[in-house]
Image (tube, rainbow, N blue to C red):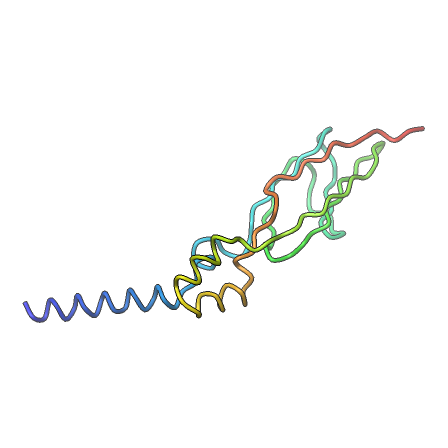
Length: 130
């Protein structure tokens, strides 16, 4: 019976240590956010920071600690530009602070506590005037 308590205590100790030395955003969220792209009309080419990434509608995983310039281009229509910003998720900071200093340092260093401001970017394209 005494051995059972020692094993239980050791397990609880390891569990508490792992929670103290982990960071919430890194464990639960990760470093990317999924973003859906759509346009009216469909079929616009989407450029992310100047690189062609796909044709609407489609979804893409983007690093959440960066800001992106999104351009929608379609023949016969005006190019539409959108800035996709990020911000620090307040909930992650609160959870990290409750966990101690190390989780704050890990999430800050990895940038995992950032979240993109939008998970869906839609562009309504206007026809070019002749």
